[in-house]
Image 1: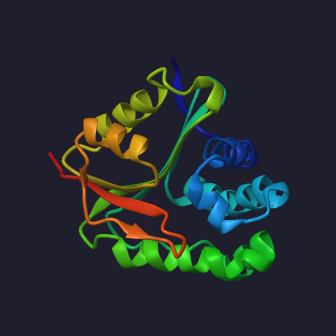
Image 2: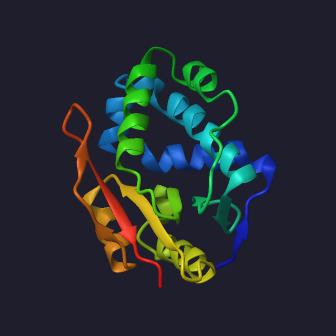
Length: 189
């Protein structure tokens, strides 16, 4: 399995992959209640963060794209994406308030200590359960040195995967519909 850094021209394909992998999740149904609009809106939102990670973080892809990991080094100030509020409004339309609420919850639960933040780990549904997500985690963890890592797990299955890789679950938080997220911290080594 070859893991490589994504190129700037791959932002749309990575965003589509993340949206496809996250589409069955309860959180995406809360964010975009209408199924017929869900994939398009979620992809547009993810593209903002993927483009930002290509410039200020790291996007790793596997074998031409069936899986991706989007990381941000939070070891110093990380700028917000350029024109974020305007781009988010354009991407999400009448769902904007739901996305803004999720952003506020993420921000309120984000640790202050230096770390690398795993924003997304996505494996195409046809390739899940084959160790690809674990390979992406191990690849990035090997380069962390003694730096800690952080993420928000959105499903018990993913929470358990991250726990197997040394992440410790913190107190969960919920969206208004009860959808849980587990902040998870992997101490520096």
